[in-house]
Every structure is written in C-alpha cells, then in structure tokens.
Image (cartoon, rainbow, N blue to C red; front, side):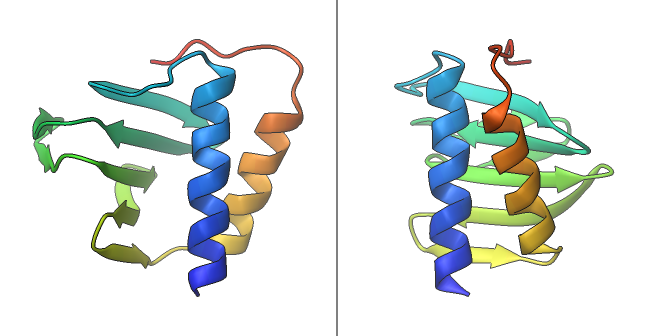
Length: 100
C-alpha cells in the first residue's frame, strides 16, 4: 500500500535526522528493534554480500530482506504495520542512537 510506503519512508528519515545522519551522502545503517535499516547515498555500495543501488533503502529482518524503497518504487514482503509500530516506538525514545 502506497500510504504504508510513504509512512515507512518518512519514519526512517526521521530516525536518520534524529541520529544527525542527514544529509545522507554515503551510507547509513541502523538497528531498529529486530530490524536493520540501510540507506545508501549517491553511489552503489557493496555491503554484506549485497549490492545496494544508490538512493535506496533496504529493510532486513532476521538477516532477510523484507523491504526495498527506491526512486522507482517499493516492495515490502513483511508485516508493514509491525515495522511502522517499531519505527514509531524507536522515535519516541528520548536518547539518540549511534548509527552502526
């Protein structure tokens, strides 16, 4: 659902801003609950046997890719609502998180 994608995108970028990682020119990685979020900046990045295209967000759960958001669209195979709740919970925390 496009509304979920926009909400996920918005929340991930809010976390990056909270971590003072904006603007993202290179690479940003963050653990959020049981998920890991990767945002790639302006060039292709090889990370953990994965080529991540420029301007792409990858969401992993348990080491498996659950979602991809890029300039061309979006795919999420996992539970979008659970991920959104996890992101919202993380944003409510008062302290900053060091990006990995």
